[in-house]
Structure formats: structure tokens, C-alpha cells
Image 1: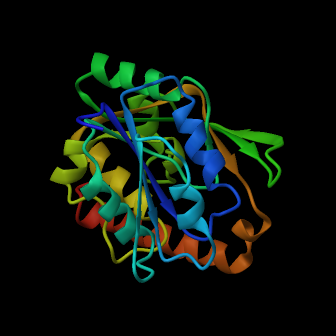
Image 2: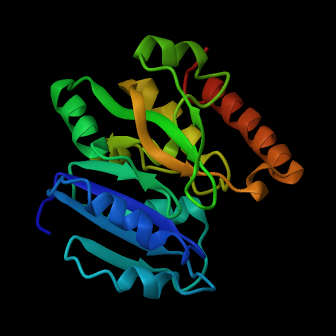
Length: 235
């Protein structure tokens, strides 16, 4: 597609079970000026094949020859993008109807804002609703908590692509918390917001909450917060 308004970027790894559902949740938005760019990070299953079988010229599928990790894959996806806005969606999640239009309208009406996220509906492996995760919605509310925790849901974010380019996007020395680090840098230069409504269905797995993962997440979060104070100018 030539010059779409939105590039939906989808990193994928061993996602054969859910990736078609994720892609179709974008295509079924009713928002025509969109491209879906999938990057298979050297999966060991049929992720690339399943994504490539979707017959829609708005979908483009790439693959890494070797596993590159999430930060490098996200940066490569940004290089492929051509839309004015970049929207993220994980390969096992689903967009809720109206998300793209809602976020595009906000950014076009509010030039001072660099990014907008939204709330998550939590779903289980089978797609059944199990909860909701909410975030502060206003720029002021976000700034009051941004050094305590990440007040954004990466799978619900839309960001102006030029901002990602200007900031050199994701720091590739991180494999956890790279999204938090990026949004700290975005928020330092631009206003930010979250829509006070559900935008994305986020699939929750048992292995996401293991003790090992929690310890690494906490350690990385502390390092990112220290970097924000020492390097990004937060106080």
C-alpha cells in the first residue's frame, strides 16, 4: 500500500496459534488506510507460513534469518513502516473495533501529543474475558506516575513515526522494558495520553508471571528509572 495513514507493526515469535486472529483483528477494523507489517523473529513453528497465507495486499510479512530479540525486531519493523503513525500489536493479541480510528483522530486533533495508548481487556488462552487493566489517561496523570511504573500498554500504543525516527526508537541493549524506556524518552519531549477506554485484548499466559521473569522485570525497571534520571533529565 502506498502511504498508508497507519502502519501496524507486529513482532512475532512462535505465534502460529494466534497470529492469524491478531492480523484479522486489524484488517476488520474498517480503517482502510492501514498496512500490517509482521516480522517473524526466526520462529521454530509455522508462524511465517500462517501469516503469509493471509491474502490481503495490506499485509506484508518479513522474517529474520536468525533470532534477533524483541528490541532489534521492533526497530527493524519501524524501518519497514511508511505510515504517518505507528501502532503496535502483539502477535497473540487482538485489536478492539474502533481502536485505529479513535487514536488517529486524537493525534490529528492534538498536534502537541506524540503518542496515545489505552486500556487493555485481559483474555485467556481461549480468548475468554478475565479482567481489565487501566492506565492514567491525562498527560498530567501520566507524568505523576511515570517514574514509579510504566503507565502505558505497549500493545495498545500509537506513536507518530517521525518521533520514533528522531529518538532512534528502541535501545537494543534491552530485552525487557524496552517499551518503558522508549516511552520515557517520548514523554520527555511530547505530551502523551491514554484513551480512557478498551483498545486492545491482551492475552495472558501462566508463564508470563513466573518468579524468574518477575525478578528480571523488576531489575530492568530499576535500571531504566535510574537511566531516566541520570540521562533523560527526569527528577
